[in-house]
Amino acid sequence: MPRCPACDERVSSADRRCPSCGESLREGSKKSGGGGNTKMVLFIVLGVVGVGFLSVCLCGVAFFVPALQQAREAAQRSQSKNNLKMLGLALHNYHDTYGKFPAASFTEDGRAYHNWQTALLPYLDQAPAYNQINFNVPWDAHENAMATGLPVAAFLNPGVKSPPMMGDSHYSGNSKTLGKNLWMGLVDIRDGSSNTMLGGEINAGFPKWANPINTRDPALGLGNNPDTFGSPFHNGSHILMADGAVRFVRADVNPTILQGISTPNGSEIIDPEF
Image (tube, rainbow, N blue to C red; front, side, top):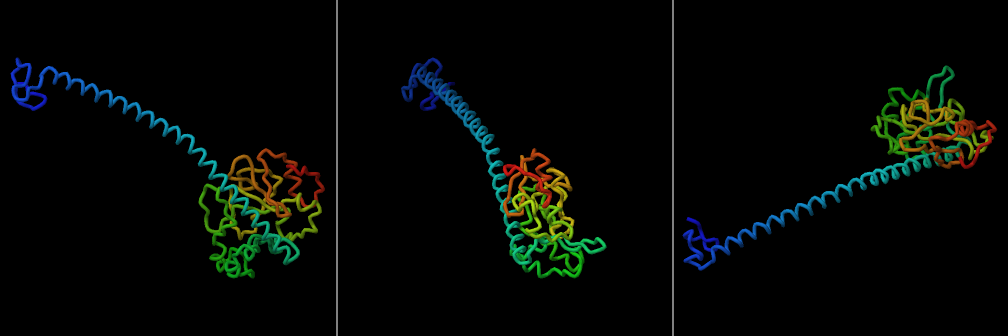
């Protein structure tokens, strides 16, 4: 037998009203059916709202992720530029002390001894590491391994994707100004300190900061190989000039500009807006 929708008592199928509570059986059926339709409409509305909300969230993520990446790269660019400024200041402090810039030192028979970056350690708040190095033996002698394997923050570019190995450097020196046994003073840079490059970012073949081979020729161009200067960032690279200024050079820079700023005495005419 059917039951009353109001009191759940059994009723006859012929009854128009429930004998217990007087509920109209036909109206009850209609109310019940109407409630079901209302629930169905509510579920549909909630479904539409949910899909819309999800779409908005996905669109927000699609816009947010590139913006976050751009902000991260901008911060990394700024830090790398600041690192080069620190190196420039250290180079000039060294120059004030010794009347010349440091150089990659080699013995007469061509053996690599110590690097220009090692000479900067006392000017980069790294005096303890500097004092651990024995300069009477080569940089890679066993007794120097612990000191020369230390990470130095000013030598590490945060934009480089690969994790640094012990003692890595993400910056290199200009082989024509900080290269093999040069020890060049500002008076020797006749092209002008604002027109001559000391070093810059690299993006491949990362050498140890203590290794004297850590110099490259800017005239070879900008790229991502072990022989050139380059950058992990888009569109160009930061370079350090002999006057301490840090410049941004576009990836499509005219090769003659790189040739000009690589030489200290080349007498090239260089556009100051390069």
